[in-house]
Amino acid sequence: MKVNQYIKRIFFICLWVIAGVGAMALLIAAIRIKREKVCKGYAIHIYTVEKGNGFLEKKNVETLLTKNGKEALTGKTTRTIELQDLEARLERHKWIKDAELFFDNNQVLQVMITERKPVARVFTESGNSFYIDSSCERLPLSDKMSVRLPVFTGFPSDKALLKPVDKSLLKEVRNVSDYIIKHPFWMAQISQVDITEKRMFEMIPTIGGHVIEFGDGSNCEQKFDRLFIFYKQVLSKTGMEKYARINVKYEKQVIGVRNTYLSKIDSIKFVKNIEYLVASSAKADSVRKDSPVLARTQNSESGIQKARDEGADSRLKLVKQ
Image (cartoon, rainbow, N blue to C red; front, side):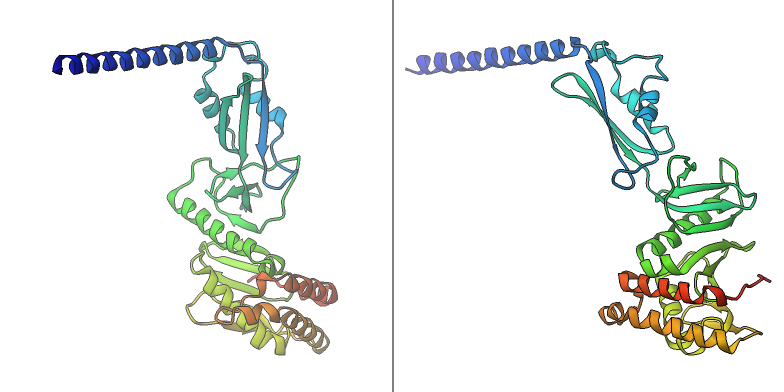
């Protein structure tokens, strides 16, 4: 009895082993057959910054894939096409953040490209310009399109290899720009950001004749919150041209330096403008009382646009000292 059970067990083990070996052989044969198939073409898909618009075109990717037509992919056996090498080649392009390649069931090479997203436009002291993305990768300008981004001027270096201190400054640029982009009020109000010799930020507003001394790129939210409180509680009463400089770089402080020239007519007009701006953003203020930033509402954008239109002719021109 025991012998029969032992024989049955051996039989079932052998049966499973044979089935496993057969399945493995079929799998290997299928892989071999698939690798011997030829590439029937390729399809390029680009995930862009904005839907329907991007800095890359399919012809740019095609040029990289085929080395400007010197290496044809169509007609080659799939086993001779090194997908990882192609992905690495594509990702060396400045505007390509990620590349993923694979063959579909029809032996068509699917090329999935993710484009980098710029977060700021930077001008160097020598006048050259470039974009940066969220990883602080410097990106070249494009004749194909441009995007509306915060503008920073006076970056100290044009070199391909930045010093650690310049890399750190570029990270601060990214942090400040990222905050501005996320808040429509400040996106509309901050015309440009100048980088001083001491590597501090000075902001030029769209409305008002003052300069905002922002300091470095740390504690962005707290600084912008203090600045908005000053706008609401002080400038709404005095007018946007009352102060030549507004300093928010010191913790829990806002320091205003008065303008030496003040026009009563301009003052009245700017008071009306800032009152309209504050009133139009009251909704956002009630939603977030602990941090009264209006930048999250479309109403604030319309308010600042009206103020810009009405006060453009009376805006004071400042010469930075």
